[in-house]
Length: 271
Picture 1 (cartoon, rainbow, N blue to C red):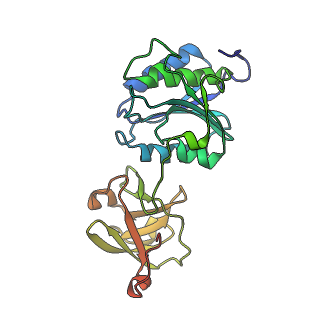
Picture 2 (spheres, helix red, strand yellow; picture 1 turned 30 degrees about the vertical axis):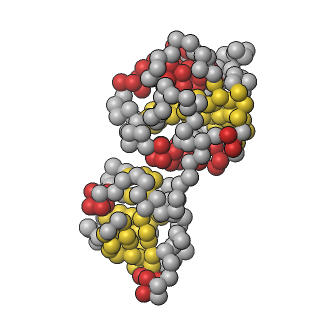
Picture 3 (cartoon, helix red, strand yellow; picture 1 turned 60 degrees about the vertical axis):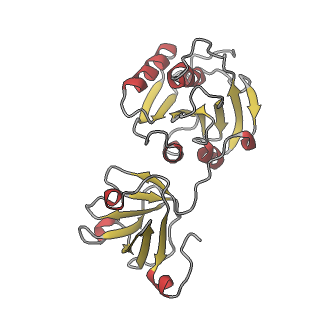
């Protein structure tokens, strides 16, 4: 193991993103980290990623990274392959470190923030680990080591970006559903005037919505399409719950087309 530093690195930040559904397991991870580095700053981003949903976890990590200082350590435990042959990785980008399973959850952030290096950590690095809780027994320990200044680049086999499990997100795919039922979609902002009527298709349901600046630009209960705070297109109902109405799920495809284009038989905006 590398030489440790206890000065300027000791107060660095660890974030934790999981699909645990409650805080009991995350609290154990926090306790392990504080035992190793009492001066670490630990922030639980969420324990409510949809169980096993790597796509949602990847979106949350991608969006979270840009609001934290450089060299923050982001730990993710959305790990349906725990105990299998899937690799445990520590990855460094220009912006941050990522620690967790190599299952695609880090791939969008790694590609967005500039890949520097990645190490596949050997299974026996922590020989006393459990078979089913690598978040507590492996990932958070590695994160704590990073905050203490350990150099983990040579702690395992060196991987290149092309060696990692990729995560391809389709255009028009639902990538997040918030607590209000608003639907975030993998579509870049439209170059259209506000007030444009849009045709929305989700599975067998087809309806229209206005493209507007914000939800309050339409009446209560009306559908709206807008650019949200995460710089992607969102579909919502003003003071309603679009998720429940559409029974939308992460990974579903939503097709959005201006009404004029529908009448002219033009392709959807993401074709």
